[in-house]
Length: 474
Image (cartoon, rainbow, N blue to C red):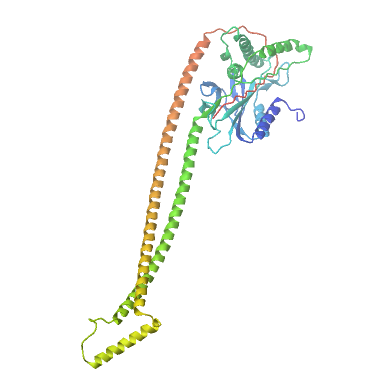
């Protein structure tokens, strides 16, 4: 009821409380629901999917396939799926019960968890693709399984033929379960064959009953004197069950697909870093090119100005040089007109230059002009040196761009190697599955040679709950 919830609602609520408290981890929850009716396994979440098979492999162990699994994110989702499965369960009226369950049901919740990280491995990979790895592996995944098993009631022979057939299968599986439990309680002192394969119920429960799990069994009895014999059998069953010794172990698993996904994530991360570095280099190159273009234009303008200044200074030097008299510059023509013309021109030039330089010494003016010309030449050499340095920087940026291109080619090579690794892992998985199938066939033949154990009394009605918390890593 809502005020007094049962085992299943409380277990589900507890799982989600634990998830709420583990803020440093991320989780994925999947649930499945099946029933064993007349030794036939049916999928309660997909009624048309019946006659499922039990498989065994080294990476995964014992499992039922193909079985529908649905991802859940809240307790409401879990309870809705349970109600959906209950609607498809075989329930009939018997001589002793109006609503008697005619099948065993197993509700399984798979809880996958790992530490939060940037790695992009998937948590939704099928269990059949997982393989065990050392527990020290980083970013490992832990797998926990919560199994809730409801056993059908063992009732006396009914008047209805169909009910009698159902009861025979129920009694057979419960008898085998009792035999297995009896053998497990004796195995420590008297080793022998445990007949897990004699029924599908015990075969599915083999991992939980043989260890590596925590098991809780709840048996119910009737207070009426009419059910005294059945209540006594139930208590005997409970006393045998509690003597089973199991040890829960922590394993970590990593699936091949998650491993490939992790490698792919690392390659993507390297690509992003490489692209970021490329963008920085391209941006820096563009900025440098624009700076060099601006500097080149500025230097060209300065050179043009220097050439103009140099030309003007040279003209002034030539003009002042003509004002200096030497023996070769003096002509011996006696003509007074020529002398007067030359003297007039000389006087005008001298007057003009003297006005410009405020009566400065011509030799001093020439010396100053030559000094300015030397400074212009020095500035020109400095500008040309800066241009050479800028050109060298451009060459270095182009070289860095070539190295960036080589890194892109290396990433493409790594992607090709990843594809080859993925193909090899798929081939390895197929070979491992074939080997596991051969091992299963051999074990089945060996077990069929052994005899069945002596039946023992079994309870009339009990509720068997199996909480399996297996910690595994992906």
